[in-house]
Image (cartoon, rainbow over the protein chains, first blue to last red):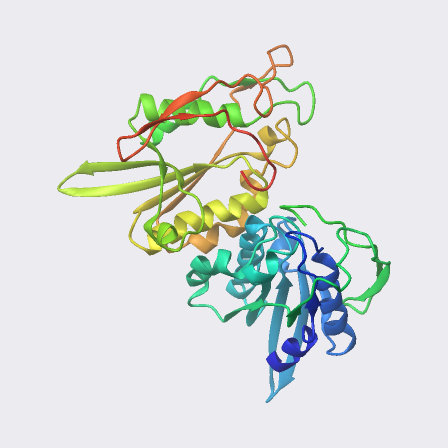
Length: 189
Length: 189
C-alpha cells in the first residue's frame, strides 16, 4: 500500500514564490481521485458508532484489503484543515479502531516546509507530531509529505473552489454520487 | 472541587429569544475569573512536553491540590470553539497526563440545549460524547453545563470582544499579566 501512496504524490512541483500562495484542497482531491480510480478505495465510509449516535461525518477514504482469509479495513484522512481539525481526524480514526470498524488508521499531512506555501493555518505533520503518542497502542500511520521540487515559475494551486469541477465519487455501498467542488473552511472542513 | 465549579455557573439566566444570539467567551471569562480569584486556580499552564517541542499553547486553567503529602495537578479547559477545537483540548489534557504533568483533566462544555443559543458552531457536550471513551483509562472529567433559566427578556451576552475589558490574569510562575479581551475565532481559539 505505501509505495503506491508515495507514487500518487510523486513528481509534485510547487510554486514557492510566496508564503500561503497555494491552495491545498486540489492536492487532496487529486490524491483521493487516484486512490478511487487506480487503487480501488472508496469514499465517505460512515462509522457505525457515529451513525448510531447521529454525530460526526464519515471517514474520507476507505479500503478493505483482502487476503489470507482475512480482511484489513483501512481508513485514511488527508488533512487540509487547521491543527484542531487534525486532532478530530485522528480521534475519529482511533474511535473506528476502538470499535473494531477499522484495523488501521492513516493520516496524510503536508510537512511544515510544504505547508508554508499552502493556505494559511493548514496544519502540518510537525504540529501534530507531539500527539502521535496518543495513538501509541493502536495501528496508526502518520504520513508527512513534501513537494518533490519547488519552482517559482510553475502555476500556483488554486484555493477554495477555484479550478475544481464537480466530479463523481465512489462509495462503499455501490452508490456513485456527484460531489460538488470542495469548499474550504478553516477549522471545519 | 466539583460543588464549587457547579456554584460558579449557578443562577445563570440566558436570553433564548433567538438561535445563536449570545456570545460564549464572556461566560468562559467569568468562569476563569472566579476560579482565579475565589478558588486560587492559575492561568495558562504550559506543558513541558509541548514547550520542549515548541508546539501548542498552554492549558487554560490549572491548580495544584495539596494534601495527605501528595499533589494532584488538575488542568481545565472551558471549550468555546468548534468541535475540532474540543478534540484538540481533550488531546492536550490527555498528553499532559501521559507525561505525568497532570493527574486529572477537566473539560467544561455547554450542553446542546444551551449551545443552541450561543455563537454558531460552538461545540456541545453531546457532540464530543462519542469520543469520551478515548480518555477511558485516564482520569478525565467531562462536564456539560446548561443555563438555570431561559428568559427572552434578559440582556443577551455580547459576542467577540464586545463588552469585555482588559483584565489581569494570574499565572503559576507568579507573574500577573494584563490580558487583552479574548477575540473569538471559530476553530482556533
